[in-house]
Image 1 (cartoon, rainbow, N blue to C red):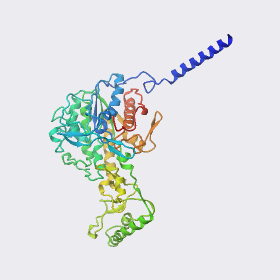
Image 2 (image 1 turned 90 degrees about the vertical axis):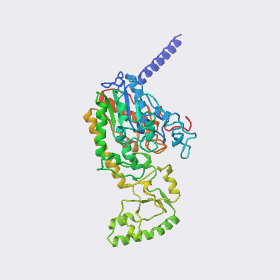
Image 3 (image 1 turned 90 degrees about the horizontal axis):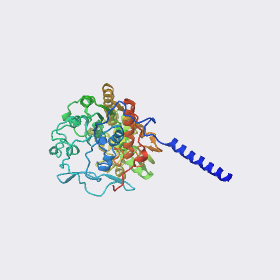
Image 4 (image 1 turned 60 degrees about the vertical axis):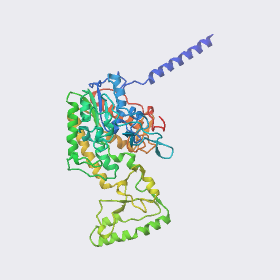
Length: 489
């Protein structure tokens, strides 16, 4: 009998211990273990403005599940715990992605990884641009939008889409053919907003290999082409106008700066020294470039180039890994000697992952980058990289200044993406990096985040909001978000 009492006593201790463990390991729903609070912010009417990142673009397309996983929708879900209202999203028709205009496909379907490479999913897009959505929407993220597009009347006019004068994504849900994105936002009298805009003001230039124009010093917005860098002075004027309009009725908000494009796998996956050559290939290539190298010596002797430029442009190969040969329009023009502007890439140059849907790695297999120099559109050269960085730094100075002057929460997205591209960011036993396909941070287009990448961004926004407004939102768990979307959703 005593033995039985002893056994029951031990069992009861075990049960109590289990209960105590459960109590200790219970996870609070706030960042500090205290009751969840909005702090000084009011999230009852949240409106999000921005571009494809705000919309939830992923895998080179916009589609329903991607929109649900946008960082803005993740934020709205957290805000709902402290009085946040409905967050309406202008959903696409399917999970295929892509767009139709008058029945003709103008944007292709999303990508998925088939085990070897990113490829389009099966199926035909069913989202028709001219099928108008009704009502107002909280997520006003518009893929492709630059800063000044948020102030542009008619940017959502369906008639302007085939002419390149309007945006097909905004045309689906704009309040009218003449409306502005900023007006569609302020008409809802938001109590809280997020603004992440400016990425596309440099991205088109970068992803096209610098084939646009660096518009620094040119404030004529009407003259901008799709791949041009927006003048930082014009950007500052636009951004101040946006912030002034959004805060006019006392709304609080959060803004984010612009990451360096060189933090994303579109620019870092294909290495500058990606050409691995055999001894036979080396001999053939060195022989082929001998006349070019000889011409450089003649140009130097004639005083047309310096000795340093001659050395920089000289092309030589050795067995093993070799720097790729590229076209660099910033070199001294020697067309008078019938010498092209060739040199080998350095670590300061970035070989693009893709352009026009064609892999840069496929070019290498065809002899491009060795026998045939990579065209300018396939490379963001060191000079072009510097132009992009200069503009980005000036944009970010504006964003930081406006955040301070308007009393807004500020997200240093640039620093976060630099960390992701370096050691990575960990959460819940998972580490997110920028490694293409496997890193978990980016989708298959190499530019836009994966589901887990959007969760990381949402956390950075939540942390900034907590810091500024005294709220105590808890980070979302990376483990709740997949790395990549499957072929079928």
